Length: 207
Image 1: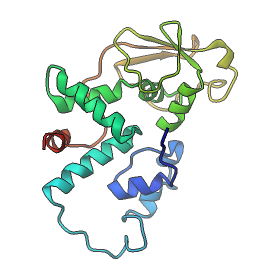
Image 2: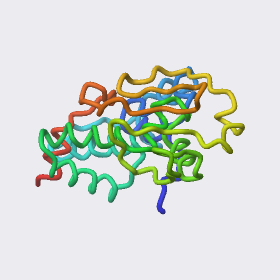
Image 3: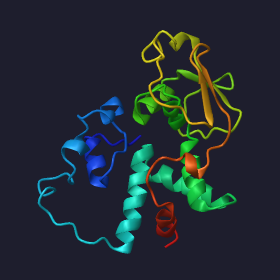
């Protein structure tokens, strides 16, 4: 599968905000966007940014959201098409579907330093969902689903010392003693912490 292999810090600088792609580094003064808040590239520090067109603003919001969740263009479009068929606002549906991805939930539970690491842990088969082995990062979970760290994986990093350093969203729960977590409810728009105008994404795909 195609994957972005360049420096992820460039993506944050391009979007002009933290996308938390580098794990714990993003929470320190080593974060590149704090040291170099201008766009990447040899002309990033000196170029004058022109006023973006309507299409440019829409594209920027889409790219930012796609990079925040670490999904490819084809995955993002499929998620949008699913959101469009659901009841309610398409933009809200899109963001909550992205939040319900298996790899994002593993990250939100504090079991990985970044979504990229969470995706790798899922692919390596370290978890079960409802007592069945699950290794598909894009799988969308529902309220009531239960995630467990497989017994054979509990002695491995990063599970050997489960010290949760990030707050877990209210729609999720995790019991470190039992090595299990659960989806208490479906996330709402207010639970999504990325600064994005989802209506611009809807306008982009509605062209």
